Amino acid sequence: MSIRYAFLVLEEHPYGRDMLQALLEAGFVPEVVIQEVSKIGDEEREKFFDRMAGCPIAPRVNQLMVGKNVPIYSVPNHNGDACFSLLQKYQPELLVLGGTRIIKERILTIPPRGTLNAHPGLLPWLRGSASVGWALYKNMPIGATVHFIDPGIDTGDIVHREQLAVVHGDTYESLNGKVSRLAAELMVRAVRDVVEGRVERIPQDSSEGETFRVIPEDLLEIGKRHLAQGTYSHFSD
Image (tube, rainbow, N blue to C red):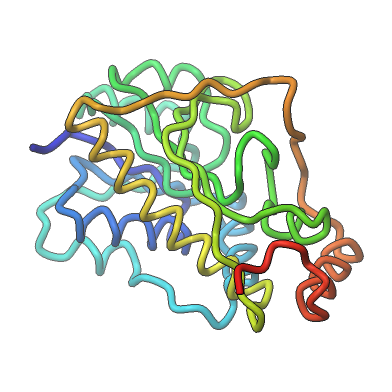
């Protein structure tokens, strides 16, 4: 079984490359790939490269798609008219987000089977940005969540959620790399569930959890010390 889906990603985002590679390896080839080429995309890509420094990262999008006969487009904004027109042209059943800006409602109304996002944190407790850093600072579990997108920020129904095993010797960077790969695995499971018609949607409690911005450097350093000194409370070994 297969599904016609569009893959949206900020240009060469490492998180999205890991996800696209996992989807392709599972046999889920997109109908179309739409990359956003923008200042925001540049900033987010570099931010994730820093967070995942030293970790293996999947090949570039063009390399992953060699021989797949799938069109790859570049747009200045995933919420703009160019992306909207492309999605109207291809009429995907499903959108899969591989690291994007917040997607607006007019884009979300196009795919009849919804839009899936993989969040690098455990929802609903850690919404927004820099979930690994905030989890370390706040001494909370680390993990990933795949959820349907709604107009809020990381507030849509949960499909899969899994805590990451953190071991002594892990670093902030290694954890971000592991979370990226876990998120990709969960996305494969979620797409398979949609294809097989057995997806389970778990509504989030809007009163639970917090929404975070990028973590300040001084607080991130505190979290890193918890990890390095062994005082982080959620080691699995």
